[in-house]
Amino acid sequence: MDMKKMMKQAQKMQMELARAQEEIKDMTFEASAGGGMVKAVARGDMSIVSVTIDPEAVDPEDVEMLQDTVVAAVNEALRGVSDMSAARINSATGGMNIPGLM
Image (tube, rainbow, N blue to C red; front, side):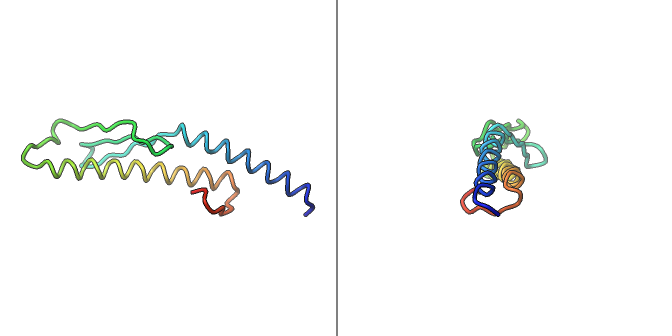
């Protein structure tokens, strides 16, 4: 493979990665825990957009359970974003494993 062709492929991949990163930033992922009593929405930049708690989940006698449920919902939302991001980056790089991207 000649150098010119390699450079062209590298530029194409760089453009695909930039496009993928923009798409990822705009993605959202919703997850729930506690049978849907707590819902969390995360954005592609790994920020939490919202946490919704069903009033039925609030038990003043068991605040720890609610805290654990919120943590579980948030972690699941972030895991979903991470999985979607990895899939999109993998698609953009044609399956090449490039250290430091994810």
